[in-house]
Length: 412
Image (cartoon, helix red, strand yellow):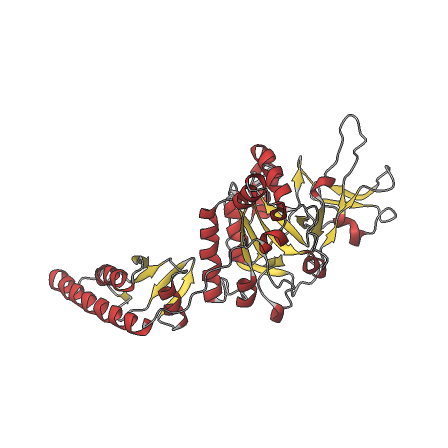
């Protein structure tokens, strides 16, 4: 039998890495409107890399960018692009550590199968041209189009400036083995977002989780983080989106795509390669063979889950009624304004919480919160009354269900 040979310098995956936002570099322009146009309304101007990553997951896609450097776009052809690298993960992890202090790169990203990225329209970069006399038909800070006699406009998004022989200022990014993607189909290549005017609507993006029914190419992705703590947060986020089937903007999330997706902890790769000398752990294929890819947590309902929930709801209802009667006896018919008081939990990976959601005895997750629909008033003409009831019911639900439960108050 011929032993399978695992290459460490080649992988079937490409990875889009994110980094901290750097307002002066990422959003050129002198007015607030110019900065806001490029920044959008989903994240702070100085959001860190992990916040950028969680925003991509929550929105369900990656918005293309202009990759500004020194106030000018490095993407040619007039359209923003999504950039990815086919560097093996361990190579990128060591690269990220070296360049982290400069703020140019981070250890957070999303990997796609190269074949699927290609099918979605992604293409490998073109490093340099066969002429040094590069002429432009347009050469503005946000739009750089090379003369079509040199390179067709439809291929210019792939062009990467390359001049390793320049002794005064060499340009060589070929070690990044870059791929790029631009939006082509307005009906497919889009997600819904909030813009800088706080308006919600569609924008060009590479969709990740919509699934085949929405003509989304990706069957699975891998989410890359640095630590186990961050992996737990991503697990909870993906599990919540899996249970809800959509985000707050009603963007569809295909459950099968999420179930097939995995979480990668770069600390594990560093440890496996540098300390345990597991060379195959340098690539996603090797990590899969070594069982170092973490699935999201989809749990089976506990034994007697229906009985556990029924008893918890009955006890919570009793506690809530008692607290409500005491409140009315003390305050009478005063009205403090209309609002909602929900008993909520954020532990979406807990089997009993997943049972509550699948059995429609809870709703959400909404921004990570699951609202437990126990019997009792969740809204009232007197918001203080609703709070008093919920404050009494929440600890009872926590004790009986064995989860953390707190009260979330929303004035109307």
